[in-house]
Amino acid sequence: MHYPTPRVRIRHWPVSLSWRERSCPLTIRLVGRDDPGGHQESREQLVSYASRLLDDELAVGTAGNLSVRSQDQVLITPSAVPCRRLEAADICVVGLDGALISGTAEPSSETPMHLAVYASTPARAVVHTHSPEVVALSAVCDELPAVHYAICGLGGPVRVARYARFGSSELARGAVAALSGRTAAILGNHGAICYGAGLAEAYDRALLLEWLARVHRLACSRGEPRILTDAELDEVAVEMRRRRYGR
Ligand SMILES: [Zn+2]
Image (cartoon, rainbow, N blue to C red):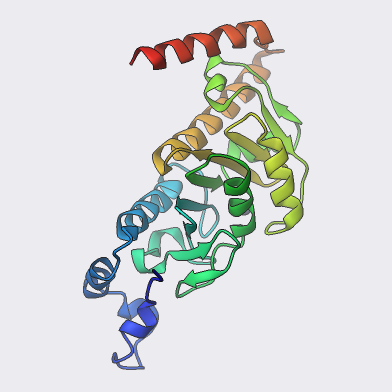
């Protein structure tokens, strides 16, 4: 079922009001009532995590974007809307082919990259950041090596995809290639992309990636870091799986 656009439902409002002025709590309640697909919860979750992007310094201003997959639709943050001002009704809904289903603004310019990740991985949520430690590393390294065993939570050493213009299909292809066997990838001179079974998991991975990049920088400032071997990482991965099975 298609989601009715807020523009239709508020057409009786005075035309002198800007869209921002119209975005009152009443509008949000109407969205929830008219949202049989359960998207309201995902919309609110995306708004909450978009704000956290700034709090956690994973992005600034309008940079960074997040999405959640719901069956054959993807809810994604809009383009050029500051994270702090984002509201549930601003979230765009697109099909897996990128066709806009509903939204009062343009979907994120990185929508093609999000869709490419959904098409090639089991992702249910995708988080794209411009976090400073990761961006700095991407400008000088081809890979974030295993300076700490927690990197196994991302599938292993994190590749840096070659720089490509934001919003381009080349960037989307590069991200997907760098994600092979991983749940996170670094985008050269740009940022990072992480996915998970839900938004919380994808976001936690973005935080972990930024922390690992920081640890790597600190280690390099003290000398040449010792990098964990493949055998050591395999041992950690086995133990992680065993403990997960245990729970
Ligand atoms: Zn970006």
